[in-house]
Image (cartoon, rainbow, N blue to C red; front, side, top):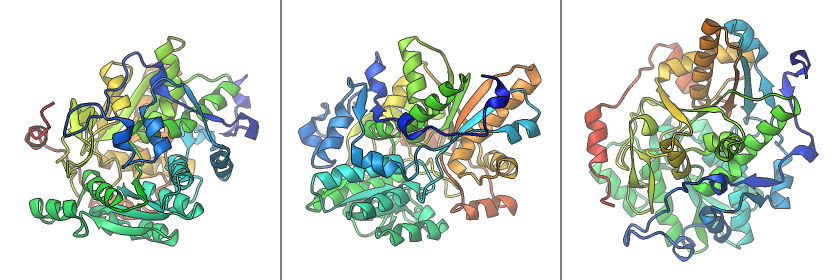
Length: 456
């Protein structure tokens, strides 16, 4: 099909929307290393995980052989409110850059939560309700996951307890209020409401918190409260499974117009957006059916892929959660308070870590002032105010497009726009006022955290 017939926005019909999630692990020859019991250092069993997670989610977490898992009708019905999401050809950005590159982005911000997180939140809330639970606990960094989960829990009449990283709780009061509007209770983490929170506060007085801290608190409350389970918005295999709808829709939309991306770019914190976007493309790559250049983009202030160590580590700062083999900066690593977006987790999804270690994708880190420069440039020409997390991918997409301008190559670029940045205006304000700075952790800081890794 000729290029001039490709619309600005490509939507799938209802019949073309995925009816099953794609489990990327089924096509991996080297499977992700299993979660370990921190006490025995042996792979965790389903029986050991069910006190923490919902029963059906435990099955999904441990299933590494079933390629496609049907999406329950109730979840598909909920998805219809905001799915399919549009695949957008960035014609205006291409024109401003004067690049021969063709740029596409999958936009996940067209729902009340403002991000892709709702794809997994509604699934996890559904399984909790189906199991007959009273409620769930969770953590949130920048607030997108907490917002999405509070919305999903409200839909299913579940109680929702959110531990929000303290610096985000203070910087983003309106994100907090959206959660409360949907009925969630929101606590700044670390807090004095849990044993592990008090321990972290004693060890790190005045800390601004991290996702690792918030995870510890949420898990403690879930395991000590009858009728509750813990849910997570990134990192875990089950989350990447649910988020595969992003990539499945993107690939179906591109196939519809005979478009094949050369480069696929996603921001990377714990891995939910990146894993969801690349899933079907990576599947083709693993099966030898096609090849793509896949780039993970992370913040220079929390660079787990590019400066971390591939090892078993705790998923939380309080060291009460299972051990996961991942690229990690150490569970005691806490990003600088001037880090303005999400992507604050100290480690990376075990699935993505294995793929990265096996050489199926590459990674780069970018400084936040350059990220916000790209965000502003994008907003001015594409009409969407992007989330800071997404803007990491925008930064590298623009950079790759400019390389095409230099070489004359007509490459096709696909990136994930995870959501909108309307709750991140404090960060935009700091950028515009010249108050934003770049903080890159020193080798010594990272080494000190890595030195505390468990001996496995």
